[in-house]
Length: 176
Image (tube, rainbow, N blue to C red; front, side, top):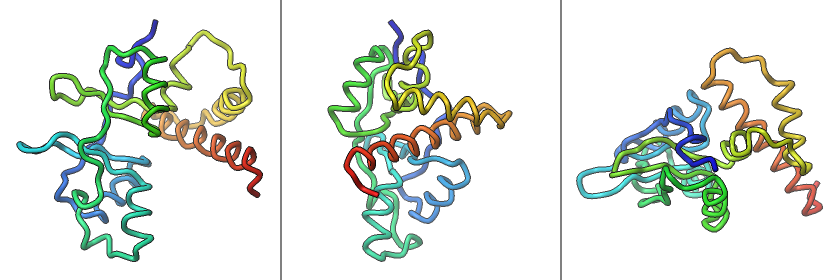
């Protein structure tokens, strides 16, 4: 059975907790990411800052992103997952915690990050998609193979998967 170590994204972008939210926004835009892992300090473990943290805790409150630090809005400690967890265990963990991604940490070392998209794309490499969400994601990914850079391709794949998921989620709730 596949493990998190085999499907995780190894290239993880980190930010210091003392950075401003504006720095986080710029870094997330430049790298086309939805979250950043926050570096641990001598006294605190890894954290995570997501686009939702920024929107709900800064933008919605009309705070100035240049005056708010990442440490003021990040989730710390963040939920992390073991590298030797199986893919079904990882999927259940993310579902139970209500999160879309978690850093993979072993012996206080950041090894990577695993996301719902990693599970969808790599979790069952030989299995054909059976449900509508998986089929729509596979179809969109098949048509979107225009980027040569593997890291940029992965970001594009993640964006497409979430767009389709959100469309289907809105449709299921009857929201136009």
